Length: 417
Ligand SMILES: [Mg+2]
Image (cartoon, rainbow, N blue to C red; front, side, top):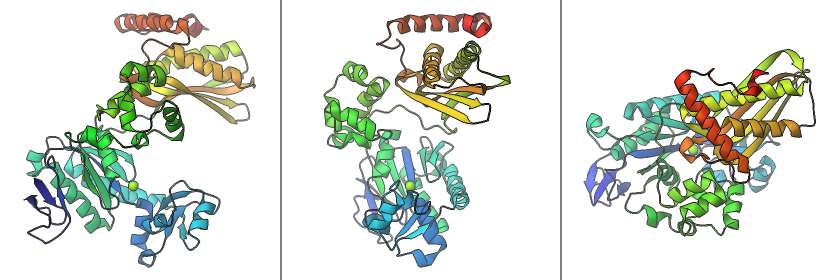
């Protein structure tokens, strides 16, 4: 069985303790030297930076957060043992841990450290996708030749280097896709090195709760639980069509995740978080027809950019600036991700109608966020709106004509206003 010493980086066979350096920190796994998709996550990052920079804090419970009325942004492991968690209100954290040292976040310092870590990751592979200051996906496919060592060795080397040079610790998850790599990095924190191989994927997931899926919050958990879905085994009992009918595009994704399948690629470029468009008017206006025309035009622009990138979004946002510069924003979450101008426009218009304020306005904006691949989007329109499918077909036909004859070939009546 392939094995790796995480201290001296020796590649071994079936060792419990490293024969070269004597370390017990040996990782053994059948697929250890074949897997290439990794997730690296620093351990209690902000708190660890503070402890590094002030050794007096080493054994004390440290909470990074915004003062007494704020929330916990990071708790060190000493504070976590006492029950303190990220996002917990500060008063609650201090009730659990009255002797905690509370430190206001020094974001510029953390950003600087993050850059140093990023530089180290860039030496391993050009395909690094950061998720936040302290975590990133890496795709090390095809790098073995360059480095003369498989990804597992390079990744163990990376966290060793982060420890030696920056005085911080991190955990690695190594697997065959992003979903599982992210799950793995969280299995054995701090200083973890966890592997989920292809052969064990389905068995590994079987009894795990579906809340392991990144992006499923309390609301998502509740709606899954209402459908009797708590574990991956529960999910496996559902047909793909049934899941999609009940949960929309998320159902499609859940069906694949239940089988440990995740086709998303590690993307080296900053992922786009949202697509939006806004207009500042020459003169403030309260004319609903004029505003409606702008709204349609912006929905078309947003939709066009989404289609060009092969993206769809689950949240539509409306933004208005009043004459006194006060900004109003409203958002709606859709059951199915969309990239259709018609849907974006209708949702934004409904938000506008619900405002109960008729301006005048100096700026109007509309956006699409919570983006995903267009493969997960609604192709047939809203099942509850029988006209939507037809409008969707018409919009795609319009897109085809524009592709062939230019973007001015068809201008909908609304945009001419
Ligand atoms: Mg972290």
